[in-house]
Image 1: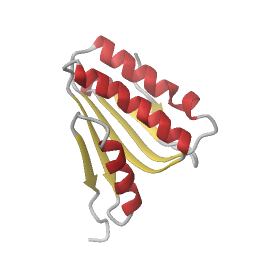
Image 2 (image 1 turned 45 degrees about the horizontal axis):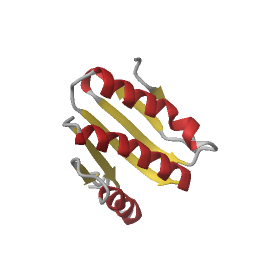
Image 3 (image 1 turned 90 degrees about the vertical axis):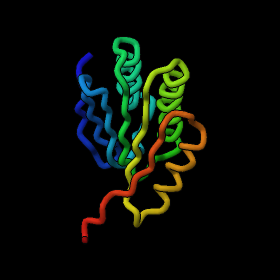
Length: 129
């Protein structure tokens, strides 16, 4: 499976992956016309990685805004990780957020409530310091 390198647009996050390190990163806003079509490549990458490698998988998120269908797609992605975690696979999520944007932190906390794998919510450094 090749790595993902999807550039950010006004309505879609950038998506990048590194198979060798077991890393997948999404950054930006997410309100595509068709979330399931857009995130299909993410589902495929995660499923292939989990099926073909025994290494850990880290999902790094720097998402600012998500529409309802993106939230549903993200829940499905996190459900894949939860299933793998339940089978003994090491998976984790690192959700980074700007500490000035409490709404993103609250959204991440709502997601975290539903999962048992390590799910870290991390403020990004203040760039004004």
